[in-house]
Image (cartoon, rainbow, N blue to C red; front, side, top):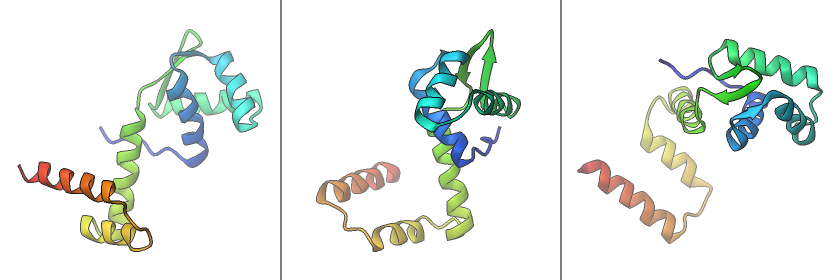
Length: 119
């Protein structure tokens, strides 16, 4: 199953959910008001839409995610890779590193990742 698209404001909402789940919808409404400045009606609308798209579940006023943070991030990266870099990992890494100096630790970690993929 393909990971559903989550838009920026929904992602910020999901960040709250992922940090606190499972959580009662009323408490989630309070947190969204505090952290995002949303009115209760906005939060309930987003909960309903995300539930309809299979991103979260709201059962007996308890909300929990059905799609995890890592899944969403991976789907976003895949979309970005295809859209902007024609699926080329080297082109993506080159663009990323072009304007950013990587530390020795970051370079070592990247090398370990590459080495593990070769095995």
